[in-house]
Image (tube, rainbow, N blue to C red):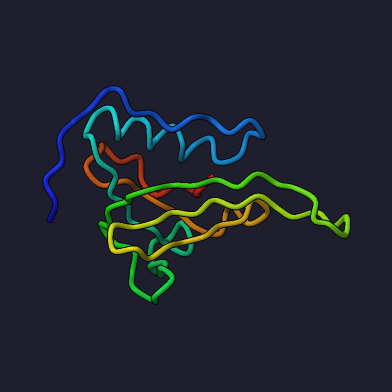
Length: 121
C-alpha cells in the first residue's frame, strides 16, 4: 500500500455541463480530508455486485491515480458524442462511464464517513 500525505491545495473542478456533481464533491472532500482517493464501486445500489475495471479486476478499496472527463461533442459526421468520465487506478487499469449512463454504477469512497452507496452522478 502506498503512503499518502494530506493536502489542501488539490481540487477537482466542477464540470461546466453539470455532470458528475455528487462524485466530484465527494472526491474533493476526500482529497482535502485524507489526501488520497480510494473507492469501492458496484453495479447498483444494493452493493451485491462489485464493478470491474478494464482488466476484469474488482473495484474494491482501489486507489485512484487520475480522473479525466471528456465533454460531449459532435463528430465529423455531425453525430452527437456523449461525454465520458475515465477513472485510472494506480495499477493503470481504468473504468469509463458515459454521461447518459451515469447511474450505471454506485460508489463509496474509503476513509470517509459513509452515507451508504450513492449513484456515480
